[in-house]
Length: 328
Image 1 (cartoon, rainbow, N blue to C red):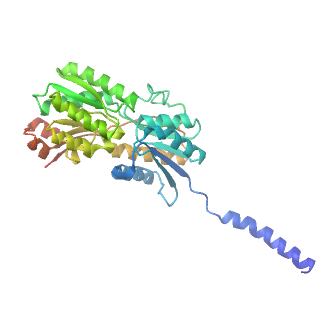
Image 2: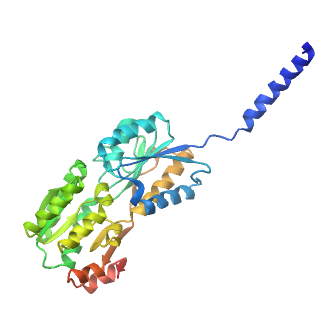
Image 3: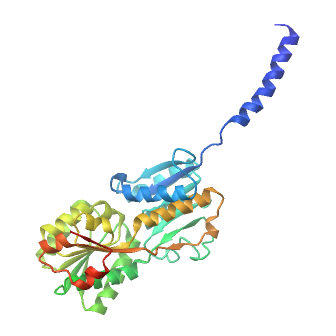
């Protein structure tokens, strides 16, 4: 090749390379979603998250990617999964599955933004400095379970006035949440004249054993604590309550939809939507320290009238009047 031709070719390449570089589409931001459960039973909540993202201008696969990390009900894996997301340099870590995943993410990074959903006071948990100004790399959505615990016990008593001894089921693997639930239930029970006994269950086998104990000790009703593991085992919990003919109170509507007697709690799908919106705002440049922790304001009371009839319980008109949904 002649020297003049070679120079011409190299000159043309020098022009083409910058143009080609400029033509490359920008890399999509990657969101890391860390949850202690498996995705099988979370379809409605994931839809809520994606709806919130879309409201903020992001659609999975179009202008944002999501790396999912599921602990499959093994909370011991959360630290490892959080560290993996940090190594992948995700833009945001989302932890909508409660305290354990939020703390795992917080331990893994002080720089990557984290958006959580927790059922306890995030200030007391050490996740944020204050609700109004989180002052760090975390923010999210909170619903105080203490107020919900008292209300749930009151509703259970209203639905089944003969109840006096209640089993409170908590997951010891989620120690912070379990201790808070036990403490709040003790306080609320004294106010309305109930006796409670707290039981631990962190595996499916332990859930079975707990219900055997409830029946043997002739407890009147069951109160299921707020816990991601219990949500993943809701079919088992509902079936056991039915088998032993025990009135049971649950923390979210999907338990009642699965046949549980009564549920009262935050609208979790809406909380996931709020998390999706916050995630999108952070992708646009928002700082967690400047995004106040949101207080969940949507709560749902769902009564399963079919289960009530099966348990020979008459649902009082006062409850029917305030229920968000009555499942027939």
